[in-house]
Every structure is written in structure tokens, then in C-alpha cells.
Image (cartoon, rainbow, N blue to C red):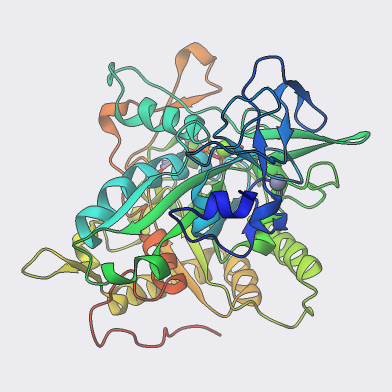
Length: 435
Ligand SMILES: Nc1nc2c(ncn2[C@@H]2O[C@H](COP(=O)(O)OP(=O)(O)OP(=O)(O)O)[C@@H](O)[C@H]2O)c(=O)[nH]1
Ligand SMILES: [Mg+2]
Ligand SMILES: [Zn+2]
């Protein structure tokens, strides 16, 4: 049996597979297998301790490739970078979403809390299953979720580490005499459940969602090099989530200082010019996709305005509840109220125009479809940890109450996969307020 016929048994293979580690595209018959026999160690790309990768010629009756020592294998790897791939990528279309933002803008907390909430709310509201495509590969994120939401000592402050450019969220691959660091993808399968109204179209609607947690430094001008192409997913992704943090903006700080107890609001001066993160992303996407300067992207860009708890005093809202945006039928099925989402977006845009107009200008120069969404990963301010000498901020798990963290993903899923998330009928009005 050939490699493609062996893998095709019981499943429909895609004609092209994309590696979420190095973004190389290849035909399914080129995929490598990871040997199992303990003596078959040492791979030129992923290191001496890794099992050898190989192109198989023999399979057992269960269609598992046999390594040269005759051991049946199950793990697959990319023919370019040799990093492992979940089988679901052979069958389902990928959906890459890039999360970008300056250092400290809240990306890691946002990723951990939104994934935790998506596991529950996609099924609860929309009858969509959201699951780990490969729990081992998602382990760092699963650990983050457990630290924040399943902590046995919820009274003790915890913190997520700052993402380092060559830390545990990156993987190194040797190409001849070069070592390249790729960001680790987090992979999830998204599938309509049998009770979903379009469950019959599962094949068209199911996806492997690929997310990355970059270090913010990677998005700053000069932050990317050929050996550290950490943000190359920007040009491959179908949707962009730009995290804007008002607590790092002097004018927001000034406006909120009296009204917010958040230690992040008390600092002074610029931490990072956050609009530069967007203009740098635009430059990289245009360079990789050969797009002229004047052309805006078709892909949706959500400006996720983080740490809402710290700047809510500038708005008319106290808490953000999902039921304000998602309407449920008598059967409990949810639909997005796009008009209400649009009204919120319009109000946040006005606020940004007042305090950080440069961000609105940069966002709307990049994409034709910009939505502004307030979110809070924590639902309240972090506290200064005394044992860190006042340097670090922590949060007590029992106090964490995320607000609207899943809304940017709902919108991207609505836009990128027609038929997956319904909207309230008659609310698909063209969003106003864009220049
Ligand atoms: N008030 C408030 N603070 C938050 C919230 N989410 C995160 N923070 C704080 O923001 C700080 C930075 O958060 P991270 O998620 O580590 O930021 P990051 O964007 O991943 O930063 P890098 O890894 O350096 O790129 C932490 O000290 C958090 O306590 C939130 O919803 N509200
Ligand atoms: Mg981080
Ligand atoms: Zn690869």
C-alpha cells in the first residue's frame, strides 16, 4: 500500500497540507513519519535526542507506517521542519489567527482565558465542539489555563511568565548551519456538533484553528530576523487580533489615573508605541504578500482593547456580559447580534479617536474590515507581589472573571467560516464610523 492510500483509508485527505510550525505547504504523500524503535534516534533538523523521521514504504494492516526496525508508528512530521503534526491537519482546512501586540499588552493572559472560555461557550451557545487537536502540543497553554482556572489554592496570587523570544513557546530547527526559531503553534479542532443547524456540512465547516503566543518584542520594528521568523504567520493568517493596551498609553493613563486602582495605570511615559506594532505588521504582511502600500487587506482585523477593567470608567458599561451580544432561541441556540456589536465597536472607536487616534489610523490603513472590541482577561486589576520587590504583578485565581474574551473569536469565526456561527437576522448592517 502506498503512503497516500494508506492514509486515505477511512478519511478524505486534503490535496495540500500546511505546516503550522514553518508554514511550508506540501502534498500529503510527502509527509514524514516519526520512528518508534529506541535505537532510531537522531534527526538532522530537530536534534540528536529526537526519533528519526522517515518516508515510509511499509504499513501494517491498521495503516500505520513501519519504521526500518518494523515498529508501527503513529506520529507524523513536516517534510520541511520535521516538527510533529496532528493527523487532523491532513483532513481539515487550517484557520490561522494571528494575535499581535506590544510586550505586556496582555497576549498570554488573553490567549489562556479566551481558549478556556471558548471550550465552554462555543458549545453552550453555538453547538460547536472546540477541542485540542494535540493535547501534548498545547501543554503550555493547558498549564496556563489550569493555573488560572483550576488552581487548588485559588487564594494565592499567580502569574503567567513573560513570553521570551527563545523560551518554551518557541522551537528550534537546524537547517544545515543555521538554527531557526519558530513559534509553537497551539492547535484546536473546531467542529459542528450533531445538534448544530448545519451539522450536515461538517466537512465544509470544520477547521484546525492555529494560534501563536509570540513575545511582544517580535512585533516591534527590527524584531524579526531570518533565523527568528516568528511572525511570518501574519501573512498566512485569515484574521488578525491586535491587542491594544490602554494602560500603556499616556493619554489613557492620564484620563484614568484618578478612577482606577490598577498599578499599571500609575506608571509614566511610553512603554511602547503600540501603533508601531500595527504599522510594522502591515509592512511585513505587504512584503511577504507582494501587496502595494495603498492596498488594504480583505482579512478582518479586530482591535482587541484589553484590560477593560482598568478603563471602564471612560465608558457607560460596568460589566460586559455575553448575553448582551448573543441572543438565544427558545431551544437555547445562540446568534450574534451584529448591530449591537457594531454599536459597541463604534463607541470604542470614538474613545480611541479621542485618546489614541494613531491606533485607529494605523488599523484602518491596514484592513478594510476593522472591529473594535473591549475585553478583560482578568475582570479586575492584578496586584503587586511583595515578594518580587514590587516588580511583578499577580492575580488571585478566585477573582478572575473574564469579560468578552471570546467575542473577537466569535466574530472571526463568523467572518471566516460562513454557516458556522449564525447572526440575528437583519443585523448584518454595514458597520459605520470608518474613514
Ligand atoms: N487590569 C488588567 N491587567 C491585565 C489583564 N490581562 C493581563 N493583565 C496584566 O498585564 C500584564 C502583561 O500581560 P501578559 O499577558 O503577560 O502580556 P504579553 O502581551 O503576553 O507580554 P509579552 O509576553 O511580554 O509579549 C500582566 O502583568 C497582567 O497582570 C486584564 O484583563 N486586566
Ligand atoms: Mg506573553
Ligand atoms: Zn514545517
